[in-house]
Image (cartoon, rainbow, N blue to C red):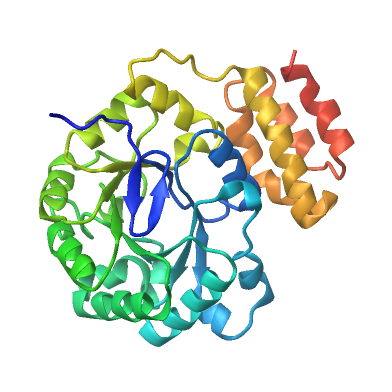
Length: 324
């Protein structure tokens, strides 16, 4: 009997309500955004990547990135470093902060991260990656997962090897971005590489990359992946998880209306203000406002006006035109 496309999924000791996960995105998946995605139907949310080295040296901002809100669980904290001992210490701090899962970043393609030996650079050193996974697994009681890519360059498929390395070192699941590191977030997704990785896996594999709707999620699941990671499609619509879930179960959920999207954005701003203070919370949202306003009338002028806002009242007055 074929397993249903949308289903509960167990990652180690953690039971997820469904197999749709928010992919980590630097500068985007903060606590306020993760709450919206959890409310929008994600079975698992993941933090921005947090520097284990910074935690080691007591960096205040990095410790703030570990903080989780009640409405976002189950939540994974993603850590990065090329030092197994440092990663183990950071994992302990993340577990202490309430992480349900520790996720190891072995897929970030940013040059600065790779130069340090972390992120996608770990894909070239499977023994070091195994050492990191093993040390982290031994240091915490919560499940440990790993995220990596199919390869470093087009045509390369390191995923089956890395799946075996990670699961043998104790990982409870992996997330596979179906593009090579050199392509960042553009270009075709390699479903054949995903299928090869899923076939090699004894633990759940979340397929990630370019998923915006139920049809694309279905294509990922058709490779044998147990779950789907959704990233950029959630940036301006955290309810995309519910839309995908409906599509996978034969429903016909309509895409979110502009008014609904802006209503979510206002809630995001309120949550951000609660975490960072009103003015700072609005400042941190400037990076995202273009996503939320994309395709709406007078979006460019509204975006420009948003850059100078300092209060939630001003934000509501600016955005009210899109909620009618």
